[in-house]
Length: 101
Length: 276
Length: 254
Image (cartoon, rainbow over all chains, first blue to last red; front, side, top):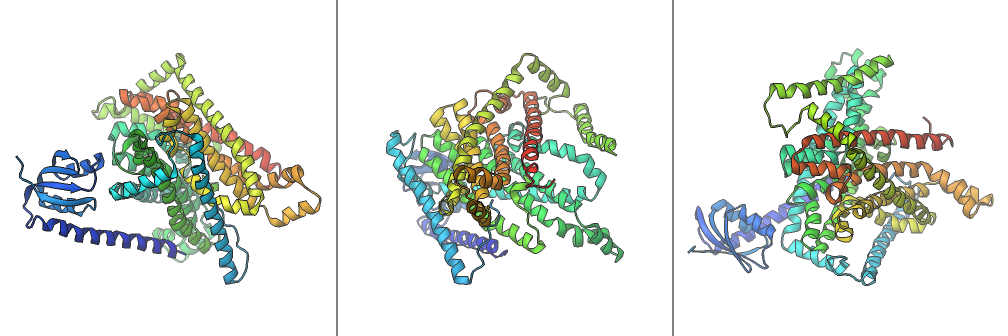
């Protein structure tokens, strides 16, 4: 009878693992545009929609949010690990380098 | 939260058909509800801010998933819930066994514990906010509180009703106190612990949503609150529906099977509802 | 032996009061974290004398009563009606179970949109909580009456109202009463919680509002009053109900 919880847990873990796998592969694709990831950098993060406070907050946790224009978020001072984390978010569609003025 | 309704003692295929037809009826009931909701929208005749239609809610749900908001909120809520549940249950069981083993201590602490539990977990939120501010600590603490007491009570009950004859028998065979606990006390207290856990899990789930409304920036409770605040009432309803589905999943896939397994093994029929 | 038990039970309370009295003399901390016993007692006296505590208590209890009355008056008849037909009951039980999962506090933001801050919202949330909790238990209670009993009463010519009073109500009574007790537990929480968010007065409101002003003595008094009130309610009202109806009819051993 403990089969049901065990199966449910297995399914949940499988889903999480699949999600992580997919997100990581996708992240690698997004980071291709950047090439070698510098230890600190300024970037332009593209979304498919206008970022809400939720997204701005999440990005703010990973770097300095300078400006939000339309569907693009400009960030400065983003570390390498933070950038990979941003790339893993599936609602981020593209990341470019940005030369801050 | 249902006592077991005995299924008719029929052969395999008929039983599945029986179960299937009941499931279908259940689905029909839900569909009827949705239909009533849809029909009521033009009757109420107000804006989507005031009374969203099912279509608005579906759109909002898709939007929330596409934007990555719902998965994160769901994960945050579940994380808080599981943390509170495990710590609260762990403490409740540990203290329940400890207190239950000593009659004097149990008698002395009972009135205090009764009183503390009477101060519903909801009422602790304000002082937790004063002490720990807004955020995850306050939320998890409230959950620990609300899970702790039912688990403690029911564990205590289970420990106190462990058959003395068995304890004596095991002791006479040379078992030390720890072995007595492991071999007799814990197994006999197990159904009580699980019942307490089920009650605590229920209160904790409601408590979670409330605490998130007051003290969180993410989570299903926060979604329900923020949707209304930001004039996106459809999101509030998405939150409510997710909350309902989440509880059904927790109850169906975890709480009930575990309770059934424990009770079947120990041959008792206890209904969780009656132990509130 | 009984006297010993009462004295034993009082010990932890005395220990807590002693620790509370001792703490500020041993450790330094800002007063708003834990006001002294004196501050709480002073506030208790003050709010009793000027009537504000009584007003808040009565306001809360009044809302609970109204909400419970509405909830129960709608839930029990409707629950019985639904459960009388086996198919109708099967159809609605999952939906009711789902609605019960979200009943109450989750509706607060919605009710604020519909009724604004104040009595309307709080009463609606309480009624909502109690309605869904007790209707679900009523349906289960009626459904669990053994078919043989149904047939027995019917074969003796029992129909309509007679069926109701001789079979349904006694048969489902235990579950219905348990449902009322459970739903009141949820309802009380819903009262305090909704007053905290959507109320304009009452115990919950008083306790939450004090956070803003860092008047922790108000919070502590609020908590104590909430605890005492629930203990009184749970013991006095519900155990009495059970004892006088169910035991009288011999459905439960005590």
